[in-house]
Length: 346
Image (cartoon, rainbow, N blue to C red; front, top):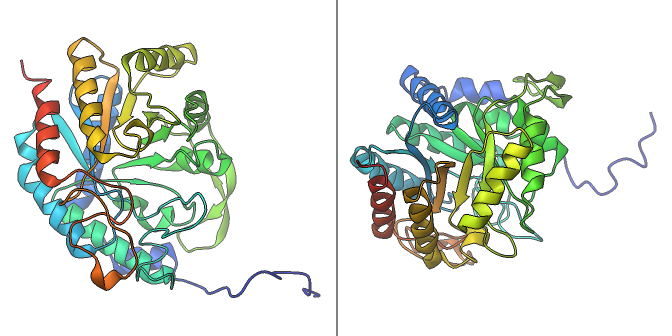
């Protein structure tokens, strides 16, 4: 077989452990399994208006430190019962999409030095997720790589498809087979209809190429995912304003999609200024208090300390500070959670 014209731009290809091998080595307990199932069921009930709580996805922009992730999770575990009107899920993002280049997240680069030991990244990420779930804190993440999902999705209670991939056929197919409720973000330009089309596509059955639990290339057939929903994350301009939310609700109805709206307080809605997340939360509170009952979820980028820092030398990183997008502090996070919780107190 002549292969002289094959893989001319490939430096190396290395085999890694199969998903089932990693799951067996790092198995989950019945308690974790129950937490994930119960959380997924609760989200489904909220989306079907059988549960009046507000879903709040809160946590670091990205996870880069195991101790920090478990510290933050413990803080959430200690306070979550103080907010009975909220279904609190920790934002645990291990993959970061890049417009050009940059750190791609803990799965791709666990050593934070572009060495890209993906096997280590998968194991470390799974270890962190087990630790967080063990604290009774459910996990939300973005599914970016279509293969890595096989390694971690059993530990996820809620998932998102990001603004850069929401129009991707591969991600629509992937989401149609995932067991978690999935939110689709509007595009980076602010296009909402694309995300609604994704929701419609995900409800349908799909057949595509993927891998099975043994890591073998396979034909995957899905049933379709009934729990997909819309995330407004802003674009060139913010889109959390009441008139845009109302228009988005109507757009969903016109396209036979249940108008379940999540609002991302960061990204385009904050215009990349973490302090503006409070402004977005205030607007959400005002809209809900005036009767907008189609806002069912909120996303907040939060860390132990506010702001962010550049990843130049990992030995000089400040503890509790994001190395990707800027986040609000833990103290401010508690203030925002209190505001949202009070909305539903009679």
